Image (cartoon, rainbow, N blue to C red):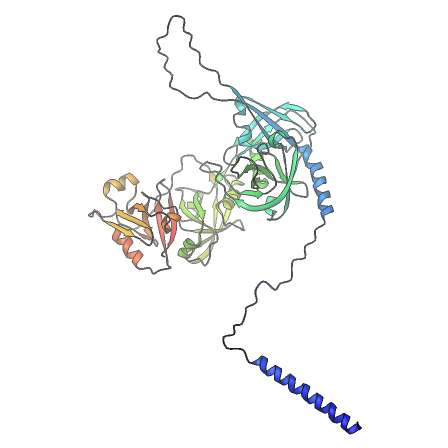
Length: 502
């Protein structure tokens, strides 16, 4: 083959390759009919660079256990059980040889844990561990086996905390951490005496924060629990929850369980709250607690929308106590508290814990949302009063006129309402409103805990004098809208509820 022929062949090959590239590119440029662009699924961010040194973690557990175990005590409480109450009549006819005896109460023994908080023998534990101990005996056993009779210094039902004192000196003392800095996923250890197994250490993580589980059944009960999956069982109560620095961050208090034993959900009182309670009990013999004077609840999405918020944030003020610190500061029912002292509050427990750490006379700064505006108020906390009364709703409308009873059913909302007569107004202590006579099971209203005999006193911030008022307001909305109701509940408390019209 000549040189000219070789060059020609190479040229033909290159021309063919170029033609093929152009042809393929053209075909790719034409999408088949009906082709759909597939969106990018999943985050394209780089994975979190987590380093886990199992040997270092193990060594941390060992070191923390060595430091914390000597500060934990076993508590044994012997109480006198009350005999069953029964009617007793001193006037009886007895036979000549009959001897009547009142049965003696039998003693009962309970076990729990505690943590040493001062060198001279003050011990922090749960109220429910030592309840009844003032009428019986309390024995504290240290990690080295020494036993002491303990004196109950004071207890606080509202936080389920108590302080004991033993006659001892130079005791090992627990180191306190900052429970405000806890994060979900953080390693923690629980130390205590579960099921009679003295000085047991279990490990887990912080599973959640700001849990309210309804275990403290007191009007002013404070619940803002740390949730952990570290194994906690009966007997752990009052013992410490500690971080990997060996610092106490909580006092183990409760479990969620169908069996009464560990099922993965334990709860601890934040140590920042427990410290304040302990200091008050030691100094004053009781807790000096400042009160803001509001009834609050968590804000759901529908109610938030009804108030003009784009998403649920903060906590809603359902009512304000007459003469309270909140009222004097200018807080109103229907306000949303977004922050307290610069800290966001999105659950009632978060606000309760901040207030519970303070004393009468302390000031708190509140960030408030009202009618589309955000502003700040300062409240000076007052002492707690047992006989505080809930402020009545104020409205500018005159009392409802006497009208013929009427009944209206709102099927979409799932409620039936009727007019109030004068007798019902006096009974329920309201100037205006309509009474709910029926709530459909599993309806929008039912899911928001609205029940029969609740009174609707406002709708969309307007007084409801009769069923016609409510009917006009509901009919002014379209499907998907939220109607904001103010209800005087069957327990006598007022609250706001947002109902979405299906």
